[in-house]
Image (cartoon, rainbow, N blue to C red; front, side, top):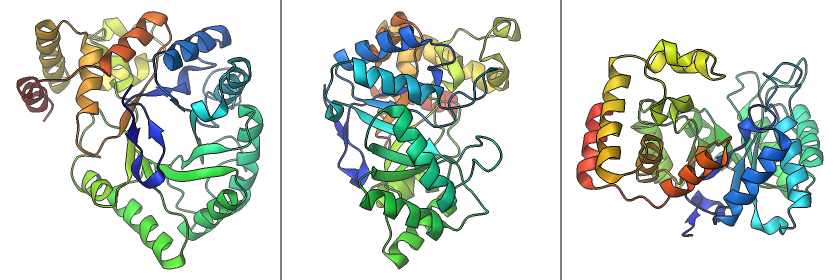
Length: 316
């Protein structure tokens, strides 16, 4: 499978990243192992997770996803170098266990390494902005971790263009590691935050982009077309906002392209992201083998100019 270089990190990844947010939530350990085996057997090599996954599930406290990935890494028989492991720090893990202070980062990374059963993290991301902690403090913590060999590269999630510019300026002024990767929310419906100044900055600064919610919490699969469709769904509370006129126009365009190409709506939605300027790879999750096979298929789709025009106009 053709690989893409992730910004200035030099990391080589396939054009799709497996979203580990489902591990320990909607995919149990056995299912997670089977999905990861199939994903890597298909030629993909990157997994995205976070220390907080999946602390929103009753009975969970966070770290469940990393723990499953760590167990899989040990039992899979694969070389550690075959996998690009991406995890994050900074989301709320409880009192005193959140944010981007040096103290918390240095503790959180040890917890993540232990759960992942590895001696290094390929890409460590600041999960969200922390207005209480200066960029310099956060970046000095990352400098220490890189120097110790515990982290190879760093990036950030959920920054806007101004925040990312400020962080890059602090890195340059103090000769500190810089955010070489950005993880923004981006899909056919949620375009405004990335398209424009943020994408332009990433392109000009050669920052790799791995976008999340590529299927808009499942909405772009086409299976949610009314509030009735959300009943009983684990993702229902996050999908309702898409059930408006614009959302229906986007689904209509996806339906048309899917009918013309013989692909599913989800496959088309992910292929559209992969074709977007500035995006290295989208993140997508699967909880069944059928869903995984669809993800794999999406990476081989080349959309026509007419299909891209139709999707772009419907989502503007």
